[in-house]
Image 1: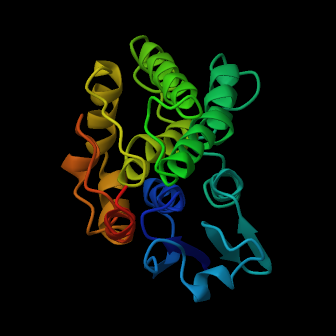
Image 2: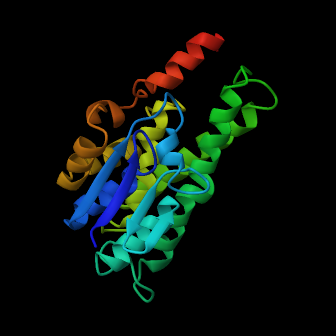
Length: 233
């Protein structure tokens, strides 16, 4: 059976598309547009929680981007882009692979939710989250001042997990990267990868890679921009 990747535009599922392209494996890509901000009903029907990504592989149906990336890398990629126990970079790989969703993405989602309340960034309920986000970006920038890729010298699935937070998610939660030169250099290395460029062309052709990797945030996702305007936020 062919691996099927159900990709919701402007979402974490771009990680799975990118991994498939890096691996050069055969897969079927099914693309879904947001309606207008959240997933359409046909996507929500794929999994009880209705979130992206979802992959199908024979009798297997799996959600959660980290689980999908791990599954595809191990099952279809023979462990490529995964650092094995015993390797000198294994602890760093393990940390950064899980840092992305456990810390970075969680913070972005919280900030996005708070931004929809209309509270200003200096509000007592909001300011600590923005301050912490700045610390997280400094932390990532410091790491990338020492190594070209998060786990060390080699590109790994930890990078595939991270990049969405620094690119696509800024279409929902805009933030500037101008103070983080090592992150910007890192994103240029990402954008130079043919696998990444193919994945974005197939999965999100409307997104401009040069805008995604720039210091200034890319344009806001259309549906969200309309919601923000309608609410006067």
